[in-house]
Figure 1 (cartoon, helix red, strand yellow):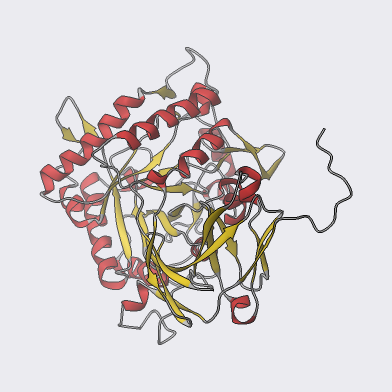
Figure 2 (spheres, rainbow, N blue to C red):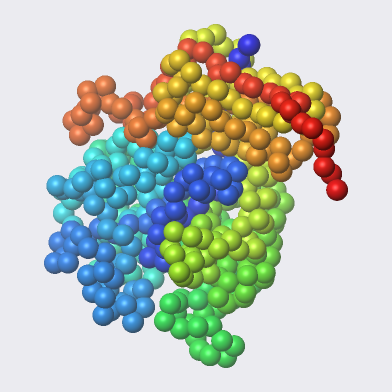
Length: 491
């Protein structure tokens, strides 16, 4: 069977998914993939790093359980899960185990870190060295930094926080050039005609790789202490979706004006809160935002992160079952968002790049820049079985399969991938030709340095790309008749 080379490219607007925070636990990527039928560009993880604090590295709410009654921010440091890397850290613990899982499944890591802004360079160099083998990843440093709720804002003034960002960003460019920095600062203020604290953060806006903001369409910031009731107080709000959209767009225009630069602009946290509006309006608000974004000819937003997959409150596609935190309860927004995720506007295009002879090496750069193989498949009609079998050298490969817009994961050691879920949802009505696209993210989740010591290797090329040799194609089993049947029952 002939094979062609294909390229995985950038979507018009990429979608990232938040997975875990102070409001929820991490959900494994296989579960998310089974629900969404498609990978995201990136998965957003949120962690905190205050290594000089006495209670470190315990999670704040566990170390100080009596503080929980005051809310999620009533702690010495943010109640995210502790970042366990850094100086004398454990690179086999959180968040590295999750980062590897994310990359094995063809997605990029989007890491948020709230960090003690008084830390010396040696601590920041330690983090940079941690992140070197994770390919083209993103790091959001001390997000929402023009606010008052995070503890780093209580430990330093805004200028110090801005200077800290610049210092850390320069360290990353030297020690981990694979990491792109995200500055999540203030949004455009219409009355003042400028971005919040733009003078203080001007140098940070110039140094960062990506501009960002956070904005919710509705939010209950009193969660989990209070309950939203009409007229009950000032700890929740609902905003006009079009005004949020226009404000975010104006933020990008203003940043271009004051910096003289043009950089990617993303929304690192976006959603509506079902606590405030109920689940149906919540879904409709997000649908309106995403539809307007798709219709906008400017294509001004590079990506946004939906916050989040599963939430202990009502900020998720699922809410956590209060009886069992391993179980999620699907919300109306999940089906809506899944439909949007599969639209061409939000999907990475797969572009043909000519024939290729085996064996060949497939390059994995990122979820927006990688090489794959394409196989042509012919379907006589709706199949009874559509399976892909792997043996020989393919058995131990780590692969992602794209087929009809659905994505399937093939782990090392997996012999067969069943693709029938596509046809359960999209039954064929007649003969057709389809393509099976195969990509090879790193099996370990890491880009491997030639020296096997990524702390010392001076050659940074390995940080950007990783390669997998493919010597053969998998075997595809297509069956259009049942192996045995006595009678059909269609009543």
